[in-house]
Image (cartoon, rainbow, N blue to C red; front, side):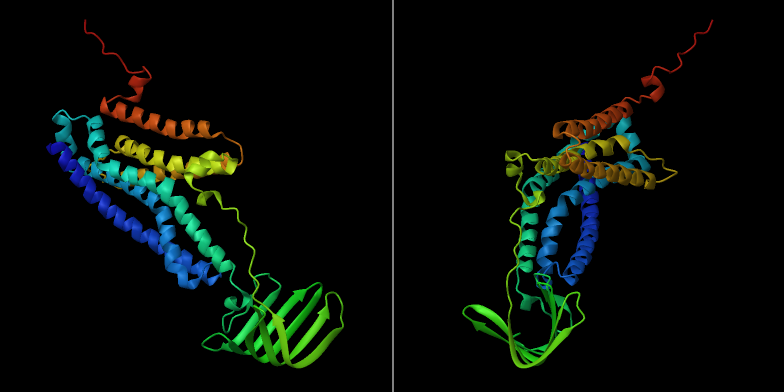
Length: 367
């Protein structure tokens, strides 16, 4: 059918162009954010590409939903501006008739959004958490970079090394500041090397000086040494409890704690929002050829931002026990769907708000 095929082709072109632009913007933002985390020591610099890829997978449902919404609004706006909408409406195609081809085009993307939110989202977050935990569990020596002051895993030591060898087994001009049991110690050495004794690693300092002082006292002790060894390399203990966003959907249903219910509401909300925004896009789109379609796109972005923020707020409200899961889903997503359907029906039947409220003037009869 010409009506369905032409509309789906137009939607496909608009959706493809919008998706490319949004993916480029999001990837750039994720790259900047991940590089910032790597510079702060939260992410392994050698795993930046992996973290960015997993993060992009997690944000892909939002990108697909927004691309569908913008493509729908943009396509219908162009039909209004080029007077093609007048032709279709004159041929007997009401505005509600556009819902069928839009859904036939969008159902693969809607299914993809559901799979990404319910399955891929927790998997990608668990992978990111695993990468960060593995990076946090690294030993003290792995944290040290030449020319930088670096804190140890326990937070009780600060290391500095001027130069190291290719194998990271030896270093020159080493400085260590440590605090343990109310005593502060500052150690400096000309050189250092790593030795393994009874499956434990020791940092052997050569030709250096040790300054010790009790916290709160003015006296200090200065010692010089030729060789001084200190044990290093203890791993960090990381909590085994996974965050709710890294828990699979089935487990969220089986263990319905407040935090799990909040996360489940967010995932179900993203799936429902993808469908509701399609209906809303059909309802709100109208264009004046003399004005352009910038107003439609601005209104579409405003609706998307408000709707998405309420989804995030609902997650925090449910996690805090302020709102129940079923009430939240019915009120927000059911209300959004009902309002969109009512708006679409009113525009399909050319209802005016005066007619809906019964305030329209009745035609006067002539005598």
